Length: 324
Image (cartoon, rainbow, N blue to C red; front, side, top):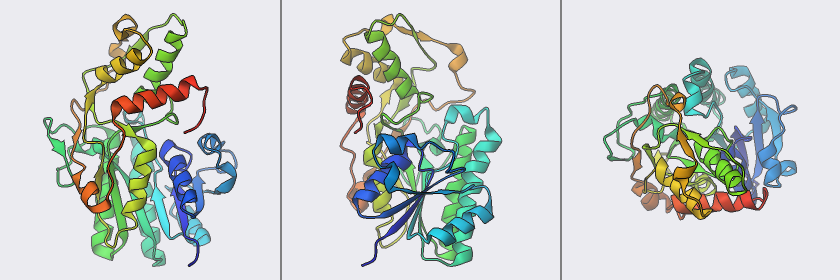
């Protein structure tokens, strides 16, 4: 049996790096793309010790010709589309780039697969942000989308593009509707990493305040290295489908902060300041999940919940960038 080939679009990000690591252990030949592979440092791949095991290609997802050329050159069995502007907050400042990088990029991949007629299985990175506010109900695969940010609008567009191509052209495409998932590879623009890094500095004696926005928001936080396995499992099924991937347990941001500082023997209330400038124009109040379908059909269930995630991120930080 020949070695399977996987192409990961957006391999330089958190999920891309963990997925590459996972697939390499499965015996895949792994290719990854970046807009300019010669200039990108691929720091996350280096941190996981797999930088030299991955073949890298330059590809602009918003350029159909570029996408087509890479698909023809690599001839992958599986494509994982994890690329695009990934910050909800930043999407309010960069709405056009967000839409183009996510929606147009996904459309170009779908069109290239249709155009070539290749037997490629496509995974698309969806987002729980698409659900919007649903009154505290647990969202599943049948919950309607009510996006409340440019990021969520772009992700919703990409989701329905894939669903359309799956139905109209028989393309094997799956969207993973992932709820929040964290790791030490998160950039500090993500609030979880911002909290962990600041709390560790404070614990070491740094006289600073942690400035946060709305601490009442409720999210389902999971462990990113687990979530990439769910992506892989979706493409191993006989029929393509979409899945909610989450822990099934939600916590407030205040609880995340309290857990972080408590693990360091600190009272968070002594160090946290609410900064009104950090509030978003619109934000989800409550995000809850029902990942039962993934458990039943994929055999996947999250092993780590928010308190575990906090402790593992803290442990990593205190071990000076050791790698999970």
